[in-house]
Amino acid sequence: MTTDLKNSQSNNQDPGTELFGNSAATDYQTGSELTPDNNVSEDNEQQIIDPEIDDVSTEKEVMTALTEPNEHSLQIRKPIKKSFIQALTIALICLGLMIATQYKTQQILLNDLSQQSDETLISLIKQLYDKQYNLTVELLDLEKQMDNYRENSEQDDSLEDTLQNELSKMKIVNGTIAVSGPGLNITVGSGLSGQDLIEIINDLWNSGAEAVAVNNIRFTNYSVITYDPLKRLISMDGTTLSAPFTILAVGDSDTLSRGVQIPGGIIDELIVYYNLQVKITPIEKVVLPAATANQEFSYAQNAEENTAADKEETD
Amino acid sequence: MSRKWVLVIFSICIITGFFLTAAVRTHLAAEEAKNTDDMNVQLVSQITELENQNTAIESEIKGIRSVLTESQKSDSQQATALQDLQQRLANSMIEAGLEDLQGPGITVSLDDRTTEAQAAYKLGRSTSPYLIHYSRLLNIVNDMRIAGAEAIAINDVRVITSTDIKCAGDVILVNTTRLSPPYIIKAIGNAEIMEKQLMTGDYYILQSSNFPVSITASNNILIKGYRGSFSFNYAQPASDEEIASLE
Image (cartoon, each protein chain N blue to C red):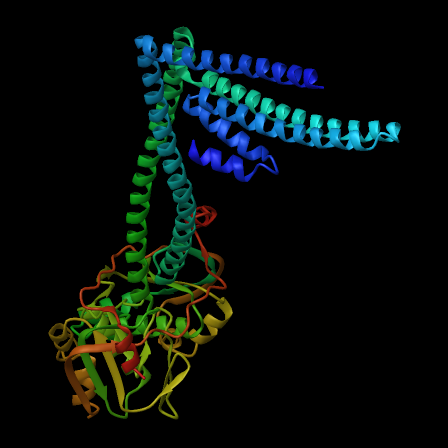
């Protein structure tokens, strides 16, 4: 109350519409309508008194200047009209605010559930239950989808693992990745022929080698060993090999070692008949490089899609 | 003048009073309704509760939906990755000799000199000069490789990286599979080049030594895939340090 008064006093000269509006609105909402109304009426009275003081002063002016009645009468009317409009404006603004507040309050009440009839509420509850049912159905469906997804995802993951394992195995088979492991080092001095090298590699595979390389060139399914008997030059996959020839194999060192040294085998023959320098060393870890290029086919095609070949085969 | 004013103030008061009364009435009616209707209170609280529940379910649905959408995105990415992986695996399996292949090429037939071998046997002499030895096969296979053979099989046993051609007595073993003559070596590749290459090596020696051998070119040779298994107990993919140690 005190703040209201202070505000109204300080704003007397310019009757603030906001101030009236605020005090009225807040008070209506809190439910104490009577007190602010008093305030308003007091304020209004104060406002209304002010123009009357003006009127008195103008009447004095009338008494002193009777010589020009027409002009004076005009002068008198003018301030009255002004103050009247002022008062009316204030009154109408107050009224407008009150109506607005009243309307707002009623709207709030209309929107308030507790103001609705029981029948309306029950039908609303039914609607909400229906909505909840539909939502729950949707939720269950989504959860099912989620479960399916998780299952598929797990299957995909295990499929990916399987494929990766297979691929990494194939890479070792094809020599497309460098490999390491226990194995054997066979070093042969000069005098080795291409035929001898082929035989040594053949013996290593026969002894369970898992990967073979000659002078740091990986032996693959498509490796080519050529020999020029006149120049006594061995080439492997286009690279001329020079002595000493270092043949590395990954596998069980003992088995490989025994396998290549069978009496009557190629190594035995090289040592005994050809007097070549051969050194066989089991090694805890050998590292074999990857083959440099992948094999590409220009003649062979996958036969799976075409059964015509099978038919021709049987003809 | 003052009369007019009274009239104005009077009418303002009346209108104000009217609205005040209406406001008070509305307020009192609301208060009354709140206090009296227990049923109403219950229903309203039920509605509020249902609304809250529904909001909760809705937000849960929204959450799952967004997870599913994300999952579907990553799913299709994974599917693409899987396809790529399957393709690479398929290619590497072809390269390793696991798939049936077909194409132009040659069929080489090698047989022992059976009549001479039997005669030598009867005479108590060595049959060895009249038999095909494993090293002949080994060299012929290498000659085929030199000539760019893309797939090779001996008596339908596929030649792969780790193929060993050995003998046990007079029996030739390829991939530890026992073979008996005649040895039919099929190769897919350029028939002409392969034939030429064979005529510079062991095939030519056999032919010159009156062994019953032949080379037949064909436009469509079928070579079956390797039927064995690959198992690696010792070889592992090399680490980066190990690869670096090679250089």
